[in-house]
Amino acid sequence: MATMNNTLSAPILRDTHLCSPAAGANVSGGSGSSSVLTRALHAARARKMYQQKQLAGIAVSNSKKTSGIKGKKVVQEKIYTRCTPAILSDLFSDIGDQQKELVRQMGFDGLLSMRLTKLNKQFGAWILCKLDPSSGNLFAGSKHEICLTCEDVSLLLGIPCGRKQILPAIKNEVKDVKAYMCEIFEKDSFDGITIATIQRILEKKFTRTMTVHEQIVFKTAFIIFVVTKFLAPQSVNNHISIRYMKALVDVENIHKYNWAEFVLHEIKDAAAALQDKIRHRKSIGYINGCIILPELFYLHHLDFGTDTPGHENISRIGVYNDSMIAEFIDRDVILKNRKPFPAYGKMKLRNRHVEKCNLGHPTGATEAAHVNRSFDT
Image 1 (cartoon, rainbow, N blue to C red):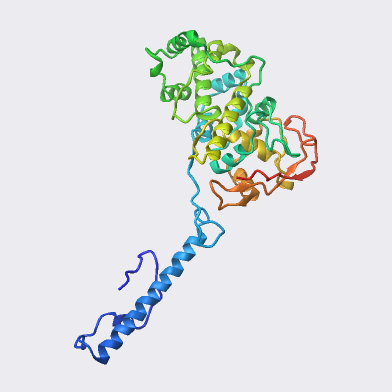
Image 2 (cartoon, rainbow, N blue to C red):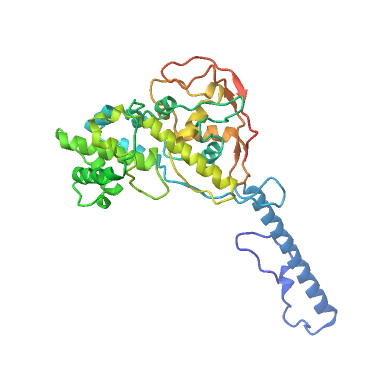
């Protein structure tokens, strides 16, 4: 007899007690035993049909795993990122006034307004597939192309867009840069500088005025932390890269460097890597860079009518919260059950000639235009 799934409740069948012969019944043959077995068989078949219907209902309701085609399952691939806004939001909510002032001096005070703690990685992956790795523009080549510039990145994230380019240390400079970092953090080797060490420095409380050295240590640690955990994370967890650390040797002039350009280059590289994986049908795995950047840039250009966020003289990242982002993403989805990730682009784009990514100078009403979805994956 078929065994019932413990998670499913079958309808009560009045004759299910006939699945086993009653005491004294003739089990060796005859019409009595035949009728008992027939009823038992019917009961088993009824339970099996009920279970199949229940399983079918569960499969249809599970939109994350099934497609709109009846009976065809679509298992969406796992997507990972080391970009963790929650860690920054928690940190910023607890640092002291002295530290906040140091962040302002460096030009990263826009990040202090961030309230986001969650990421929609599938939404971010979809947008990266629309981003041209060469120009950094969304929907490149279409009439709805949106230009993403360093100035946009600066306004979106609230980070410096200075004139000094961030250059990686050349081979004969690497040793000196690492030695400088070891001196700052009082470590015997560069490997001793970990994210845990950096985080402890940032979380330290001061009841007195910080010394000049303590200020330098904090500024250096802050940049390493936000780059590693948010602005330009890489696939290796908590990997501290030296590719930008030459600028940290000049920590008092951090605000003069073009950090927006650095972040933009990282996300363009991430877009190129993702598109190459999809083109060659490889596993997506980890997505590098600040995946939330293209998400904010795209959402900023959508027309949500009266729900469209207002323009304040703060970084755009401070305008949004988790529930707002989730609602906007849900309103923009076209097909949830799509592989390797859902398809978006339902909402209209605001006219790029009218609506600029200029937070300090809003231009008023906007004209809506349909998103070009000809490159949906």
